[in-house]
Image (cartoon, rainbow, N blue to C red; front, side, top):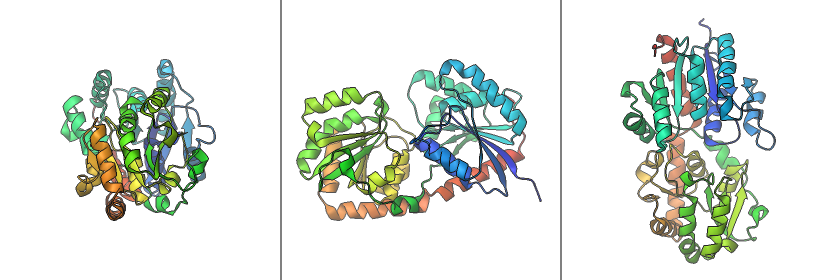
Length: 378
């Protein structure tokens, strides 16, 4: 019987996030009779309460190495540390996820490429310096895994990645776990008892367009007198968003929770997920909301159309349009029958197309293929 193929999974950090969750699901889900996976994390082990994913890996008895690097200026040391560990493991395939992990993995594997190198692109970032860097990195990779067709199109058009090296593997979500969790107690974050909520789960950064959502909020809250707006996440734009909420006169019906470890529980207590992203890759929280049987309203950022498929017209708007965003939210939530129909249809679409099992099997097939072909020399 053939020995399991050795896989190195590399990620920047392991705090709870979409990419991090997908990597952990992949590491835990790969069949151990076929694959021997080791996880390498550039950052230190996260502290409580942000260590859920680290704890899950440990409970699964997977080997995990935390390299302990936090700062960009220590990149050369991170490269040396990862290279030394890869030499000991001698993996057949190195699969990285997130920008800094891609950089370090590419440099650690080097131009001689003793292992097949697969880089993970998870967002269609329009920043020019990122496009230049990712384009150069991608030319060294045997495969570039994109989380959506939109990201693959971005990689081909803006990064110059040949179509032959591009593979699309969508995120996966644990549908049963999302639906099974108990709804959160929203009074924890100041929501008065009996009030209903429209929820946004997002890093508070320009990419995520939370400012666009706040500009849509006066019309949303005026049209939904029983609802408040709940924003889950942290980030550098929090002070500016506080000021904007005050200017718009909505601060008394707006609740910022900060970073939270149990997002599905909050979604289970919500009536809708709203996203206003300026750019994306494939928003994992949308999959979680759909798995919780919620309707969603989102800008048509990268990956959103692929997630929603035939349900997109009823739940998407153009980017940077507060007026259209508020109109779509009101159209859905003022019609309980429509909201319930979309929630059920969303759940079915995720169960059919975006399960963890489908994601893991797609990576397994990729790792088999890469293990059987000699690595290309950059």
